[in-house]
Length: 490
Image (cartoon, rainbow, N blue to C red):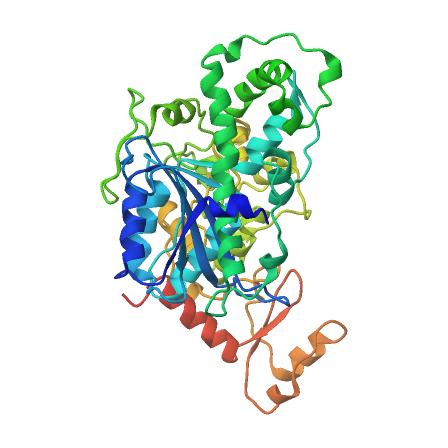
Protein backbone atom coordinates (compact mmCIF):
# COMPACT_ATOMS: atom_id res chain seq x y z
CA UNK A 1 0.00 0.00 0.00
CA UNK A 2 1.25 3.48 -0.88
CA UNK A 3 3.06 4.86 2.20
CA UNK A 4 2.87 8.50 1.07
CA UNK A 5 -0.86 8.22 0.54
CA UNK A 6 -1.27 6.60 3.96
CA UNK A 7 0.53 9.46 5.74
CA UNK A 8 -2.02 11.97 4.45
CA UNK A 9 -4.80 10.30 6.40
CA UNK A 10 -5.82 11.00 9.95
CA UNK A 11 -7.32 7.85 11.41
CA UNK A 12 -9.49 7.78 14.55
CA UNK A 13 -10.55 4.48 16.10
CA UNK A 14 -13.89 5.01 17.87
CA UNK A 15 -14.54 2.45 20.61
CA UNK A 16 -16.94 4.39 22.85
CA UNK A 17 -19.51 7.15 22.60
CA UNK A 18 -17.83 8.74 25.62
CA UNK A 19 -14.44 9.01 23.90
CA UNK A 20 -12.78 12.07 22.41
CA UNK A 21 -12.73 10.29 19.06
CA UNK A 22 -16.53 10.12 19.06
CA UNK A 23 -16.68 13.88 19.68
CA UNK A 24 -14.36 14.37 16.70
CA UNK A 25 -16.65 12.13 14.64
CA UNK A 26 -19.79 14.14 15.43
CA UNK A 27 -17.96 17.38 14.64
CA UNK A 28 -16.54 16.05 11.37
CA UNK A 29 -19.92 14.78 10.17
CA UNK A 30 -21.52 18.14 10.91
CA UNK A 31 -18.87 19.89 8.82
CA UNK A 32 -18.62 17.47 5.89
CA UNK A 33 -20.40 17.46 2.55
CA UNK A 34 -18.92 14.12 1.48
CA UNK A 35 -18.65 10.84 3.42
CA UNK A 36 -17.19 7.60 2.08
CA UNK A 37 -18.78 4.43 3.51
CA UNK A 38 -17.34 0.95 3.90
CA UNK A 39 -17.71 -1.99 6.29
CA UNK A 40 -15.71 -5.06 7.31
CA UNK A 41 -16.74 -8.39 8.81
CA UNK A 42 -15.32 -11.81 9.55
CA UNK A 43 -15.38 -13.86 6.32
CA UNK A 44 -17.73 -16.83 6.32
CA UNK A 45 -15.77 -19.94 5.49
CA UNK A 46 -18.81 -22.05 4.70
CA UNK A 47 -22.40 -21.50 3.69
CA UNK A 48 -24.40 -20.05 6.56
CA UNK A 49 -28.03 -19.01 6.67
CA UNK A 50 -27.39 -15.93 8.81
CA UNK A 51 -25.83 -12.71 7.57
CA UNK A 52 -22.30 -12.03 8.81
CA UNK A 53 -21.89 -9.67 11.76
CA UNK A 54 -20.28 -6.37 10.77
CA UNK A 55 -17.30 -5.67 13.02
CA UNK A 56 -16.09 -2.33 11.66
CA UNK A 57 -17.77 0.61 9.92
CA UNK A 58 -15.53 3.12 8.17
CA UNK A 59 -16.57 6.73 7.64
CA UNK A 60 -14.20 8.85 5.54
CA UNK A 61 -15.06 12.54 5.92
CA UNK A 62 -14.14 15.42 3.68
CA UNK A 63 -14.71 18.78 5.39
CA UNK A 64 -16.56 21.40 3.40
CA UNK A 65 -15.38 24.99 2.85
CA UNK A 66 -16.97 26.02 6.15
CA UNK A 67 -14.37 23.92 7.98
CA UNK A 68 -12.13 26.04 10.25
CA UNK A 69 -8.89 26.71 8.32
CA UNK A 70 -7.03 27.22 11.62
CA UNK A 71 -7.76 23.63 12.61
CA UNK A 72 -4.96 21.10 12.33
CA UNK A 73 -7.45 18.92 10.43
CA UNK A 74 -8.50 21.58 7.95
CA UNK A 75 -6.49 20.24 5.02
CA UNK A 76 -6.38 16.63 6.08
CA UNK A 77 -8.63 13.72 5.22
CA UNK A 78 -10.20 12.21 8.30
CA UNK A 79 -11.29 8.59 8.56
CA UNK A 80 -13.22 7.23 11.54
CA UNK A 81 -13.21 3.50 12.26
CA UNK A 82 -16.27 2.61 14.33
CA UNK A 83 -15.57 -0.53 16.36
CA UNK A 84 -19.04 -2.09 16.35
CA UNK A 85 -17.93 -4.91 18.64
CA UNK A 86 -17.13 -2.38 21.40
CA UNK A 87 -19.76 0.33 20.98
CA UNK A 88 -23.33 -0.41 22.19
CA UNK A 89 -25.10 -0.29 18.83
CA UNK A 90 -28.35 1.34 20.03
CA UNK A 91 -26.27 4.31 21.19
CA UNK A 92 -25.14 5.13 17.63
CA UNK A 93 -28.17 3.96 15.65
CA UNK A 94 -29.80 7.39 15.56
CA UNK A 95 -26.58 9.11 14.50
CA UNK A 96 -25.99 6.69 11.62
CA UNK A 97 -29.65 6.76 10.59
CA UNK A 98 -29.53 10.54 10.27
CA UNK A 99 -26.21 10.39 8.44
CA UNK A 100 -27.56 7.92 5.90
CA UNK A 101 -30.55 10.10 5.00
CA UNK A 102 -29.10 13.59 5.53
CA UNK A 103 -29.67 15.64 2.35
CA UNK A 104 -26.68 17.80 3.29
CA UNK A 105 -24.16 14.96 2.93
CA UNK A 106 -23.45 13.04 -0.27
CA UNK A 107 -22.60 9.45 0.62
CA UNK A 108 -20.16 7.43 -1.49
CA UNK A 109 -19.73 3.67 -1.55
CA UNK A 110 -18.44 0.74 -3.55
CA UNK A 111 -21.25 -1.82 -3.92
CA UNK A 112 -22.43 -0.69 -0.47
CA UNK A 113 -25.88 -2.21 -0.88
CA UNK A 114 -24.74 -5.59 0.47
CA UNK A 115 -22.88 -3.87 3.30
CA UNK A 116 -26.06 -2.05 4.26
CA UNK A 117 -28.00 -5.33 4.49
CA UNK A 118 -25.35 -6.85 6.75
CA UNK A 119 -25.20 -3.66 8.79
CA UNK A 120 -28.97 -3.67 9.29
CA UNK A 121 -28.90 -7.31 10.36
CA UNK A 122 -26.11 -6.59 12.85
CA UNK A 123 -27.95 -3.69 14.47
CA UNK A 124 -31.23 -5.65 14.65
CA UNK A 125 -29.44 -8.53 16.37
CA UNK A 126 -28.17 -6.10 19.03
CA UNK A 127 -31.53 -4.76 20.13
CA UNK A 128 -32.38 -2.15 17.50
CA UNK A 129 -35.98 -2.55 16.34
CA UNK A 130 -35.20 -1.72 12.72
CA UNK A 131 -32.06 -1.49 10.66
CA UNK A 132 -31.23 0.93 7.85
CA UNK A 133 -33.47 0.88 4.80
CA UNK A 134 -31.89 3.57 2.62
CA UNK A 135 -28.93 5.84 1.95
CA UNK A 136 -29.76 9.14 0.27
CA UNK A 137 -28.25 10.95 -1.54
CA UNK A 138 -25.90 8.11 -2.48
CA UNK A 139 -23.45 7.62 -5.32
CA UNK A 140 -21.79 4.32 -6.17
CA UNK A 141 -18.21 4.46 -7.42
CA UNK A 142 -18.91 1.47 -9.66
CA UNK A 143 -21.61 3.42 -11.47
CA UNK A 144 -19.30 6.41 -11.91
CA UNK A 145 -16.54 4.29 -13.38
CA UNK A 146 -18.78 2.24 -15.66
CA UNK A 147 -20.57 5.30 -16.93
CA UNK A 148 -17.43 7.21 -17.82
CA UNK A 149 -15.41 4.26 -19.03
CA UNK A 150 -17.99 2.55 -21.22
CA UNK A 151 -20.12 5.31 -22.73
CA UNK A 152 -18.44 6.86 -25.72
CA UNK A 153 -20.24 9.30 -28.02
CA UNK A 154 -23.63 7.99 -26.93
CA UNK A 155 -22.73 4.36 -27.69
CA UNK A 156 -23.10 2.12 -24.67
CA UNK A 157 -20.46 -0.60 -24.55
CA UNK A 158 -20.64 -3.81 -22.49
CA UNK A 159 -19.89 -3.19 -18.83
CA UNK A 160 -16.79 -4.64 -17.28
CA UNK A 161 -16.67 -5.59 -13.62
CA UNK A 162 -13.79 -3.74 -11.99
CA UNK A 163 -12.53 -4.22 -8.46
CA UNK A 164 -11.93 -1.21 -6.27
CA UNK A 165 -8.21 -1.98 -6.36
CA UNK A 166 -8.18 -1.82 -10.17
CA UNK A 167 -10.17 1.41 -10.23
CA UNK A 168 -7.77 3.00 -7.70
CA UNK A 169 -4.77 1.94 -9.74
CA UNK A 170 -6.23 3.35 -12.94
CA UNK A 171 -7.56 6.63 -11.56
CA UNK A 172 -5.35 7.42 -8.56
CA UNK A 173 -2.24 5.46 -9.52
CA UNK A 174 -2.10 3.86 -6.07
CA UNK A 175 -1.86 0.18 -5.21
CA UNK A 176 -4.69 -0.88 -2.92
CA UNK A 177 -3.77 -4.23 -1.41
CA UNK A 178 -6.80 -6.43 -0.79
CA UNK A 179 -4.94 -9.14 1.15
CA UNK A 180 -6.38 -7.98 4.47
CA UNK A 181 -9.95 -8.08 3.20
CA UNK A 182 -10.23 -11.74 4.21
CA UNK A 183 -8.61 -11.32 7.62
CA UNK A 184 -10.58 -11.91 10.82
CA UNK A 185 -12.10 -8.51 11.55
CA UNK A 186 -13.74 -9.78 14.73
CA UNK A 187 -10.38 -10.20 16.50
CA UNK A 188 -9.34 -7.42 18.86
CA UNK A 189 -7.20 -5.43 18.97
CA UNK A 190 -7.04 -4.60 15.27
CA UNK A 191 -3.55 -4.55 13.82
CA UNK A 192 -2.10 -1.32 12.43
CA UNK A 193 -2.18 -2.91 8.99
CA UNK A 194 -5.90 -3.58 9.34
CA UNK A 195 -6.58 -0.01 10.47
CA UNK A 196 -4.66 1.45 7.54
CA UNK A 197 -6.32 -0.87 5.06
CA UNK A 198 -9.80 -0.06 6.36
CA UNK A 199 -9.13 3.70 6.33
CA UNK A 200 -7.77 3.79 2.78
CA UNK A 201 -10.58 1.55 1.54
CA UNK A 202 -13.09 4.23 2.54
CA UNK A 203 -11.03 7.33 1.77
CA UNK A 204 -10.19 6.35 -1.81
CA UNK A 205 -13.91 6.69 -2.63
CA UNK A 206 -13.67 10.42 -1.93
CA UNK A 207 -10.48 10.75 -3.96
CA UNK A 208 -12.11 9.10 -6.97
CA UNK A 209 -15.18 11.31 -6.71
CA UNK A 210 -13.02 14.44 -6.43
CA UNK A 211 -11.51 13.73 -9.86
CA UNK A 212 -14.93 13.92 -11.43
CA UNK A 213 -16.12 16.85 -9.35
CA UNK A 214 -13.15 18.94 -10.49
CA UNK A 215 -13.91 18.15 -14.12
CA UNK A 216 -17.57 19.07 -13.64
CA UNK A 217 -16.55 22.38 -12.06
CA UNK A 218 -14.15 23.12 -14.94
CA UNK A 219 -16.78 22.54 -17.58
CA UNK A 220 -19.75 24.01 -15.77
CA UNK A 221 -22.83 23.75 -17.94
CA UNK A 222 -20.98 23.04 -21.17
CA UNK A 223 -22.11 19.43 -21.13
CA UNK A 224 -24.60 20.08 -23.89
CA UNK A 225 -21.78 21.04 -26.23
CA UNK A 226 -20.06 17.88 -27.37
CA UNK A 227 -16.71 18.40 -29.05
CA UNK A 228 -15.63 16.37 -32.02
CA UNK A 229 -13.21 13.63 -31.03
CA UNK A 230 -10.55 11.83 -32.99
CA UNK A 231 -11.52 8.15 -33.08
CA UNK A 232 -7.90 7.22 -32.39
CA UNK A 233 -8.29 8.64 -28.88
CA UNK A 234 -11.30 6.57 -27.94
CA UNK A 235 -9.24 3.56 -26.89
CA UNK A 236 -7.35 5.49 -24.22
CA UNK A 237 -7.74 4.25 -20.65
CA UNK A 238 -9.64 6.49 -18.26
CA UNK A 239 -6.45 7.49 -16.45
CA UNK A 240 -4.86 8.42 -19.77
CA UNK A 241 -7.84 10.55 -20.70
CA UNK A 242 -7.68 12.43 -17.43
CA UNK A 243 -3.94 13.06 -17.75
CA UNK A 244 -4.14 14.62 -21.23
CA UNK A 245 -5.64 18.10 -20.94
CA UNK A 246 -6.37 18.62 -24.62
CA UNK A 247 -7.90 15.24 -25.37
CA UNK A 248 -9.06 14.65 -21.83
CA UNK A 249 -11.08 17.84 -21.48
CA UNK A 250 -13.00 17.17 -24.69
CA UNK A 251 -13.69 13.56 -23.81
CA UNK A 252 -14.49 14.07 -20.15
CA UNK A 253 -16.76 17.00 -21.01
CA UNK A 254 -19.08 14.61 -22.79
CA UNK A 255 -18.60 11.70 -20.44
CA UNK A 256 -19.28 13.75 -17.35
CA UNK A 257 -22.62 14.78 -18.81
CA UNK A 258 -23.51 11.13 -18.63
CA UNK A 259 -22.02 10.81 -15.13
CA UNK A 260 -24.45 13.37 -13.79
CA UNK A 261 -27.26 10.86 -14.30
CA UNK A 262 -25.66 7.91 -12.55
CA UNK A 263 -26.96 8.87 -9.11
CA UNK A 264 -30.39 7.80 -10.27
CA UNK A 265 -29.27 4.17 -10.40
CA UNK A 266 -28.43 4.06 -6.73
CA UNK A 267 -30.12 6.93 -4.90
CA UNK A 268 -33.20 5.91 -2.96
CA UNK A 269 -35.18 9.05 -2.17
CA UNK A 270 -34.57 12.72 -2.95
CA UNK A 271 -35.56 15.30 -0.39
CA UNK A 272 -35.45 18.45 -2.52
CA UNK A 273 -38.19 21.01 -2.20
CA UNK A 274 -40.11 22.16 -5.30
CA UNK A 275 -37.77 25.15 -5.48
CA UNK A 276 -34.80 22.79 -5.68
CA UNK A 277 -33.45 23.72 -2.25
CA UNK A 278 -32.20 20.75 -0.28
CA UNK A 279 -33.85 20.55 3.13
CA UNK A 280 -31.88 20.04 6.32
CA UNK A 281 -31.75 17.24 8.85
CA UNK A 282 -31.27 18.68 12.30
CA UNK A 283 -29.88 15.73 14.28
CA UNK A 284 -26.32 16.16 13.01
CA UNK A 285 -26.56 19.96 13.00
CA UNK A 286 -25.28 19.96 9.43
CA UNK A 287 -24.94 22.93 7.12
CA UNK A 288 -26.38 23.02 3.59
CA UNK A 289 -24.49 20.96 1.04
CA UNK A 290 -21.75 22.66 -0.98
CA UNK A 291 -23.14 24.32 -4.11
CA UNK A 292 -20.95 22.19 -6.39
CA UNK A 293 -22.46 19.03 -4.92
CA UNK A 294 -25.98 20.43 -4.95
CA UNK A 295 -25.65 20.95 -8.70
CA UNK A 296 -24.86 17.28 -9.17
CA UNK A 297 -27.68 16.14 -6.89
CA UNK A 298 -30.14 18.45 -8.68
CA UNK A 299 -29.28 16.72 -11.97
CA UNK A 300 -30.55 13.47 -10.57
CA UNK A 301 -33.57 12.02 -12.30
CA UNK A 302 -35.25 9.91 -9.69
CA UNK A 303 -35.88 6.43 -10.98
CA UNK A 304 -37.47 5.02 -7.89
CA UNK A 305 -39.67 7.87 -6.72
CA UNK A 306 -42.76 5.98 -5.69
CA UNK A 307 -45.41 6.60 -3.12
CA UNK A 308 -48.03 4.40 -1.56
CA UNK A 309 -49.62 1.48 -3.32
CA UNK A 310 -51.77 2.54 -6.26
CA UNK A 311 -54.56 0.39 -7.67
CA UNK A 312 -56.51 -1.02 -9.19
CA UNK A 313 -55.82 -4.21 -7.25
CA UNK A 314 -55.54 -7.22 -9.57
CA UNK A 315 -57.48 -9.35 -7.06
CA UNK A 316 -60.56 -7.12 -7.36
CA UNK A 317 -63.56 -9.38 -8.06
CA UNK A 318 -64.89 -6.90 -10.62
CA UNK A 319 -61.65 -7.31 -12.59
CA UNK A 320 -61.86 -11.08 -12.63
CA UNK A 321 -59.77 -11.69 -9.52
CA UNK A 322 -60.52 -14.15 -6.74
CA UNK A 323 -60.80 -11.55 -3.98
CA UNK A 324 -57.42 -12.27 -2.40
CA UNK A 325 -54.09 -10.53 -3.03
CA UNK A 326 -51.46 -12.65 -4.72
CA UNK A 327 -47.81 -11.74 -5.15
CA UNK A 328 -44.84 -12.53 -7.38
CA UNK A 329 -41.53 -12.00 -5.59
CA UNK A 330 -38.57 -11.52 -7.90
CA UNK A 331 -35.12 -12.93 -7.12
CA UNK A 332 -34.17 -9.87 -5.04
CA UNK A 333 -36.90 -10.62 -2.48
CA UNK A 334 -37.12 -14.40 -2.81
CA UNK A 335 -36.78 -14.78 0.96
CA UNK A 336 -39.86 -12.60 1.38
CA UNK A 337 -41.85 -15.13 -0.68
CA UNK A 338 -41.23 -17.86 1.90
CA UNK A 339 -42.20 -15.52 4.74
CA UNK A 340 -45.46 -14.63 2.97
CA UNK A 341 -46.23 -18.30 2.46
CA UNK A 342 -45.61 -18.96 6.15
CA UNK A 343 -48.40 -16.52 7.03
CA UNK A 344 -50.75 -18.02 4.45
CA UNK A 345 -50.32 -15.54 1.59
CA UNK A 346 -50.06 -16.71 -2.02
CA UNK A 347 -46.52 -15.73 -3.06
CA UNK A 348 -45.02 -17.16 -6.23
CA UNK A 349 -41.46 -16.87 -7.52
CA UNK A 350 -40.21 -16.48 -11.12
CA UNK A 351 -40.27 -19.56 -13.32
CA UNK A 352 -36.62 -19.14 -14.28
CA UNK A 353 -33.60 -18.40 -12.09
CA UNK A 354 -32.56 -15.27 -14.00
CA UNK A 355 -35.77 -13.90 -15.50
CA UNK A 356 -35.80 -11.00 -17.91
CA UNK A 357 -38.10 -8.07 -17.02
CA UNK A 358 -40.49 -9.09 -19.78
CA UNK A 359 -40.84 -12.58 -18.25
CA UNK A 360 -41.72 -11.08 -14.87
CA UNK A 361 -44.25 -8.74 -16.45
CA UNK A 362 -45.89 -11.57 -18.38
CA UNK A 363 -46.13 -13.85 -15.33
CA UNK A 364 -47.50 -11.00 -13.21
CA UNK A 365 -50.16 -10.17 -15.77
CA UNK A 366 -51.24 -13.73 -16.59
CA UNK A 367 -51.51 -14.80 -12.94
CA UNK A 368 -53.07 -11.50 -11.81
CA UNK A 369 -50.39 -10.85 -9.21
CA UNK A 370 -48.55 -7.87 -7.75
CA UNK A 371 -44.84 -7.93 -8.53
CA UNK A 372 -42.72 -7.29 -5.42
CA UNK A 373 -39.16 -6.18 -6.05
CA UNK A 374 -36.26 -4.06 -4.82
CA UNK A 375 -35.10 -3.37 -8.37
CA UNK A 376 -35.96 0.26 -9.13
CA UNK A 377 -35.40 -0.33 -12.85
CA UNK A 378 -38.47 -2.56 -13.00
CA UNK A 379 -40.63 0.45 -12.17
CA UNK A 380 -40.14 1.60 -15.75
CA UNK A 381 -42.54 -1.16 -16.79
CA UNK A 382 -45.44 -0.07 -14.56
CA UNK A 383 -47.47 1.11 -17.54
CA UNK A 384 -47.53 -2.45 -18.93
CA UNK A 385 -49.38 -3.98 -15.98
CA UNK A 386 -51.41 -1.06 -14.63
CA UNK A 387 -49.20 -0.21 -11.66
CA UNK A 388 -49.07 -3.81 -10.43
CA UNK A 389 -45.47 -3.35 -9.24
CA UNK A 390 -44.47 -2.46 -5.72
CA UNK A 391 -40.90 -1.65 -4.68
CA UNK A 392 -40.11 -3.04 -1.23
CA UNK A 393 -38.15 -0.52 0.82
CA UNK A 394 -37.06 -2.67 3.76
CA UNK A 395 -33.91 -4.79 3.61
CA UNK A 396 -34.54 -7.55 6.15
CA UNK A 397 -37.17 -10.25 5.60
CA UNK A 398 -39.14 -9.64 8.79
CA UNK A 399 -39.39 -5.91 8.05
CA UNK A 400 -40.26 -6.65 4.41
CA UNK A 401 -43.10 -8.91 5.57
CA UNK A 402 -44.51 -6.24 7.88
CA UNK A 403 -44.19 -3.61 5.13
CA UNK A 404 -46.20 -5.71 2.66
CA UNK A 405 -48.84 -6.55 5.31
CA UNK A 406 -49.26 -2.86 6.15
CA UNK A 407 -49.11 -1.55 2.58
CA UNK A 408 -51.70 -3.98 1.24
CA UNK A 409 -53.71 -4.08 4.49
CA UNK A 410 -53.50 -7.85 4.76
CA UNK A 411 -55.38 -9.53 7.58
CA UNK A 412 -53.23 -12.22 9.18
CA UNK A 413 -54.62 -14.67 11.73
CA UNK A 414 -53.01 -17.48 13.68
CA UNK A 415 -55.12 -20.01 11.77
CA UNK A 416 -53.40 -18.96 8.52
CA UNK A 417 -49.86 -19.63 9.76
CA UNK A 418 -48.06 -22.48 7.98
CA UNK A 419 -51.06 -23.15 5.74
CA UNK A 420 -49.11 -23.07 2.46
CA UNK A 421 -46.19 -25.11 1.16
CA UNK A 422 -43.04 -23.07 1.72
CA UNK A 423 -41.33 -25.04 -1.05
CA UNK A 424 -43.71 -24.44 -3.98
CA UNK A 425 -46.49 -22.15 -2.67
CA UNK A 426 -49.11 -24.90 -3.03
CA UNK A 427 -52.03 -25.61 -0.69
CA UNK A 428 -52.30 -28.67 1.54
CA UNK A 429 -54.67 -31.59 1.15
CA UNK A 430 -57.42 -30.73 3.61
CA UNK A 431 -57.57 -34.16 5.24
CA UNK A 432 -54.49 -34.95 7.37
CA UNK A 433 -52.61 -38.22 6.80
CA UNK A 434 -51.76 -40.86 9.38
CA UNK A 435 -48.17 -42.02 9.84
CA UNK A 436 -48.80 -45.11 7.68
CA UNK A 437 -50.41 -43.02 4.93
CA UNK A 438 -47.54 -40.52 5.07
CA UNK A 439 -44.89 -43.26 4.74
CA UNK A 440 -46.70 -44.62 1.70
CA UNK A 441 -47.09 -41.17 0.15
CA UNK A 442 -43.43 -40.32 0.73
CA UNK A 443 -42.02 -43.37 -1.05
CA UNK A 444 -39.46 -42.47 -3.68
CA UNK A 445 -38.95 -38.78 -2.89
CA UNK A 446 -39.02 -38.02 0.85
CA UNK A 447 -37.84 -39.88 3.95
CA UNK A 448 -39.90 -39.85 7.13
CA UNK A 449 -37.59 -39.87 10.20
CA UNK A 450 -37.85 -43.08 12.24
CA UNK A 451 -38.29 -41.10 15.46
CA UNK A 452 -41.73 -39.99 14.28
CA UNK A 453 -43.17 -43.49 14.05
CA UNK A 454 -43.87 -43.78 17.77
CA UNK A 455 -45.55 -40.39 17.95
CA UNK A 456 -49.18 -39.80 17.23
CA UNK A 457 -48.63 -37.11 14.62
CA UNK A 458 -50.71 -35.83 11.77
CA UNK A 459 -49.08 -35.23 8.38
CA UNK A 460 -50.06 -32.73 5.73
CA UNK A 461 -49.23 -33.04 2.04
CA UNK A 462 -48.89 -30.33 -0.57
CA UNK A 463 -51.33 -30.86 -3.43
CA UNK A 464 -48.83 -29.49 -5.98
CA UNK A 465 -45.38 -30.88 -5.14
CA UNK A 466 -46.45 -33.67 -2.69
CA UNK A 467 -44.05 -32.42 0.00
CA UNK A 468 -45.01 -33.75 3.44
CA UNK A 469 -45.12 -31.66 6.63
CA UNK A 470 -45.85 -32.55 10.25
CA UNK A 471 -46.41 -30.60 13.45
CA UNK A 472 -43.05 -31.15 15.08
CA UNK A 473 -40.65 -28.85 16.89
CA UNK A 474 -39.77 -26.88 13.74
CA UNK A 475 -43.44 -26.31 13.01
CA UNK A 476 -44.22 -24.98 16.49
CA UNK A 477 -41.10 -22.77 16.48
CA UNK A 478 -42.11 -21.31 13.12
CA UNK A 479 -45.66 -20.62 14.29
CA UNK A 480 -44.38 -18.83 17.39
CA UNK A 481 -41.90 -16.84 15.30
CA UNK A 482 -44.57 -15.42 13.02
CA UNK A 483 -46.94 -14.80 15.91
CA UNK A 484 -44.21 -12.58 17.34
CA UNK A 485 -43.23 -10.97 14.02
CA UNK A 486 -46.82 -10.14 13.08
CA UNK A 487 -47.67 -9.20 16.69
CA UNK A 488 -50.74 -11.45 16.67
CA UNK A 489 -50.89 -11.57 20.49
CA UNK A 490 -51.21 -7.81 20.83
